[in-house]
Image (cartoon, rainbow, N blue to C red):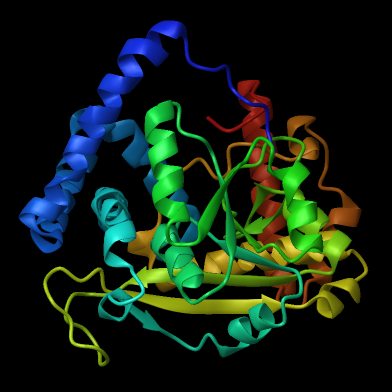
Length: 371
């Protein structure tokens, strides 16, 4: 799953990283001192200020372009507001994630988490048979992992190691205390087959990231997007069930359930779908089908709470081979898109048209990927 970047220099290991570690750990004390509610409020305001700053204009414009692709019905002011709210969400996440290991405990989690209809997912996990958990950069994926682990299921979360080694060690240890194991993404594919084969836990992927030029390209908001092959390979090898879900932040004080307090995280755990091996193995191209299925599941989660998605991510950066080589849309790919049961003829036509426009843009500007 990628090439491991170069390690830190001796100066970084000896001086810079320890200093950063203590500075960051000091900053993480703030929610415990000021309280989670006030800290989140401050973070939200800081996120809006950061998103609205002049130096961030290019990223906001990129986010607005992504929003236009995903939700063309929104006008320009609405797209701008949603892009700014994504920065509010990002900053809120920073505060909330520092509180996860402390707040979401065996005794306290019902004060912070509401469970939706998760019976089908729980039934799958209780069998002990291979299962793969899927979410996206929507809602709070850290809360989702903590909750699944606290319900008694082993979670092996794919994780990019932090460059600051002391901070990386602290993050791993704090997560493992709640039953969530972090796997180095650069070596995970060597470990995951054994984990699935021997029932050591359910691998968990945040699966909406750009996966590079050699990935599998399936639709995402009506546009081909680079998607991980590793999920499909693991699922096919072990007949694993895919479970897609998210932790969606609720407005404070909303809905029924346990009494909330100002320091509550207020998240709702939702299962978007469960895909069993028999369902994807019966398809003409099981790999393409299950990859398109989980991308569609993430898309539906994003649509449920678009203000809680990181629109600034470059999810359409890498482009399929036919676009990079300025070739016509491949007929076999068109046939695969048409075979997806949720696609209409109009859906396929929109995907092909968007791909043709992307191909023309790359050719006109001499590019191999989107800027």
